[in-house]
Amino acid sequence: MTAPSDKERVLWNDPRASRRAAVDAQATAGNDLGVFPADKAADTKILVIGDVMLDRYWFGEVDRISPEAPVPVVRVARREDRLGGAANVARNIVALGAGAALMGLVGKDEAGEKVAFLAGEEGIRARLVIDERMHTTLKMRVLGRQQQLLRVDFEEQPEAGGLDDLMASARTAMAACDVVVLSDYAKGCLSRVEGLIALAREAGRPVLVDPKGHDYVRYRGATIITPNRAEMAQAVGAWADESDLERRAQALRQELRLEALLITRSEQGMTLFTDKGRHHIDAQAHEVFDVSGAGDTVLATLAVARASGLSWEAAMGWANRAGGIVVGKLGTSVVTAGELS
Image 1 (cartoon, rainbow, N blue to C red):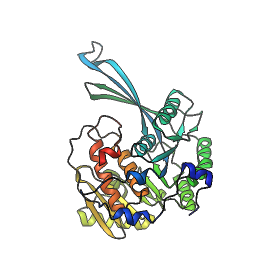
Image 2 (spheres, rainbow, N blue to C red):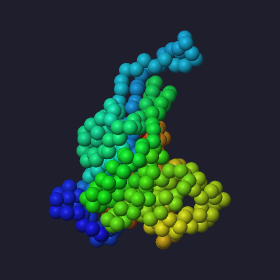
Image 3 (cartoon, rainbow, N blue to C red):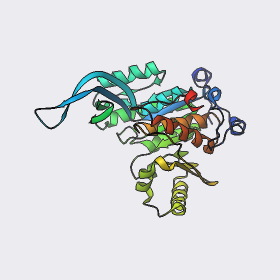
Image 4 (tube, rainbow, N blue to C red):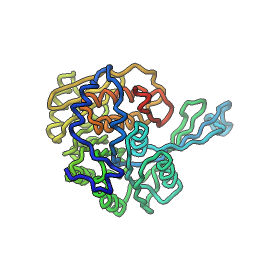
């Protein structure tokens, strides 16, 4: 592994592999997780690269139907912007007490400026690439009485110039981190994901990928991928039972040369596949209010726990707990280390 320079060490402390055994003795992947290793997390720095978005919320009251069309009229009383996509992963990492840097593509527009501003407010070290030929991905949600009535998406694919700039900056950024997280929302930022994985491997950094689509060959060489249930079915086909799922998952893991593969399965919990076999944990019972951004929270928690020295099994336990908490919150939200413990 290429160690960070003395200058980089000020911002990015190099983790020690010996942490893992010590921390594993204090936590397991079941419900008895002990205390979240916040002190270890504070010494870690995680680089998030992926599709950066701005989540915009308009909250209001609905008390009549429009005379122009059979639709509710929302009298907007409050507006709120939140970091979304890969930026929400970074936001969750910071909320858990770790350091986070964020790389992605934004346009030269109001939404891109707001992403940069919010990232600074959250304590995220933003290294955003501005592509003047694209617009920042924006998801605008209209809510009445805390219920989502409409979502409007503004998005477009980046061009080659922006991707070139991103790749040129990635090598230096990876040298200054402990773990690399790739958050793929199929908006184009990770269209050269193979090159990013190669750079991370060259730097000796673990790579956690939240995949998208059905072509998982592009993620070959990552350390772990975290598809949800539907995404896994897209990649390997429908499975008949748990034994069939294990066979398909392990075959995919070996084909992609992954250290681990984690399937998030909503109310069915999470299932981890490694060379040790299959490890499953049931979902923690919580009232589901909003699943927006829940995958971001799971990915962030998994990254922080792993960077803090936990085994994949223990890291999955914390990610499962965090996911159960965040679905009880409105919109793209975060879970703190205090809430986990």
